[in-house]
Image (cartoon, rainbow, N blue to C red; front, side, top):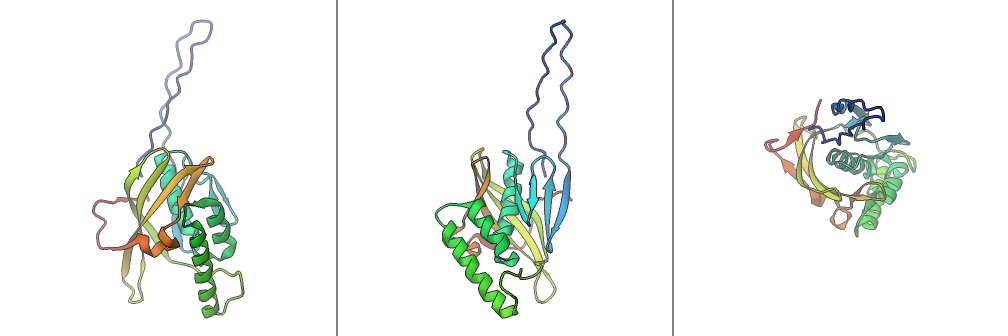
Length: 205
């Protein structure tokens, strides 16, 4: 990922008249990868998420890279795959917009249908997902709102790799990035099959 611009702070000269201290070089973010139940997700020590607890992810920097990571981490967790202990608070607390309630309703319904098909106890996660988050492309960015297309790749039933790009919008609200719920609460309406990564930026690592 491209390094976000950092504000450099010049240290003032002391009262004894010494010269200002040298301007420090911006620190490069350190990117690591998390295996989130089969989904590979990038983590940045600068841009977040700063809080990882109870399978949730919160605390993203007020930067372009923070917006990207928020779109990715929140978008993944607002999914029936991980069970209501994850998607319920994620959608309730980290998703906004006119279709947020619809997203929660659809996710609950999808979870219950799949849980019964699999014969799982109530509340149990549906299993691993085996997805790689590969690349992204910005549609727009301001300090208050951003839209980004994120490429996910995974195996299809024939064993070949298939890719799709999902458009996710985020807004800065109450000190953190929030995902805007997809139209009609349906992530499928925001996803498009993808044949090539031309024009996309691959995630580091």
